[in-house]
Image (cartoon, rainbow over all chains, first blue to last red; front, side, top):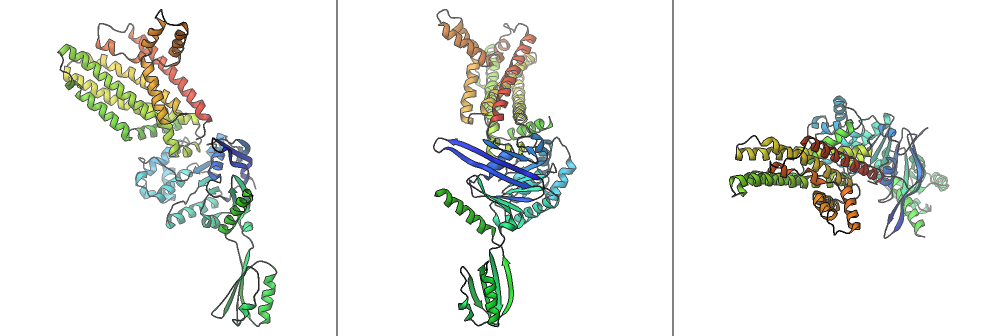
Length: 308
Length: 261
């Protein structure tokens, strides 16, 4: 599959009087495939927004290379088929929703009122088209932001914290729209702190810390394995004490034994011992790691590595 | 071109809603309206002083509006992050800068038009003389070129200095540029001036835009001292202004193109 975004040793260095030269983005290697929802994760100050700004040529890399939809970053042609929704965007408040979309469409040399109206419908703002942006709620402003990002029918969307600070209903609306983008064959590059959201919608993720990519891959692979949950019945409570599996959480309630244990050979041994004790195995469920756990562990490990 | 016009149009929309600019404009309009009451002079003196005072109010108010409007033109877009959404579209930085400048000049023009209207109306109501209105109306046209040049100066500085520094830099340059003829004559025509000082004065005379060329109050106030060949003078000063504006905008575009926003 072709790469929607590719970077090789992309670096951004800032110089400050107190700290000297600081690599905000440090030899970043990124690979985003076309048609996927890609999560770009990292703690505050990790270099996420700086990376996006470099990919959009809002700022310039100090060194390294990058390509967006096969074109070198800085090539203005690619701006015709990409779009960007910045974190906490501000729009000209005196404009109505329709006027705002007309303004942004004119930046593409278009003047298509019908398209703007259709986009307002798509983001459920058709009834608010004549309200000024100052009258829009935060969620409505985010939706008008998504509408402006669809004006040029983009192949690739950069969304920086698209659900940040929104209520659960607005969250769901934005999430549904993003999933629709993937169904339409668009590539979506999301920078976010909302890990549960990312886990639900992203195909692949990269975790960035201190300007470097420290983990990158398919979510299913990154979160694969980890733990199993075994539930069994018809066992005495005393069986609970015989389970001696490291890092396992064992509980017994209402005649049911529940063992939450790490993946490994102990699983077969546990199943054998339950059968030997004439117990009934109700379920053996493989449980994925949570993205939050993976994120925290990855960031912690790299921070400890850097401190050594 | 459509992108430049769209950016210019939003700049006008923002400018005419900025409270600080509206307050300055209202103060200017107020002073223009009450100027006749500040007299206490003989009828002949009144005409001369009144015309001079009203043109002075128009010029000063326009200069303050021009500087306040343009020093925040680019920094506000960066601070509010509107520039990111715009530059992520197929819009070149020079187009953005040119759109912002044209919008600022257009907004400035609208405000000056309003003030000029009040000035002419006040003059007419007081003097009941339409014969001089055409002559007086020439001054705001010259001022408009002057203020467009001042706006270009402020846009140029706004690409690399903070708004506060820009305010004083542009204001300072406007002040020096308005006194340029006097300063230059004092240094260059004086036989006692050191040749090195003369050379510096000549360099400053070339670099600093000559804002004084647009101050045509004297020929308007004193009909006995008309401008020789007014058409040629108007064409020359306009071409001079456009030339400087182009130089400043090209410089601003080159700096802004390399700037991290």
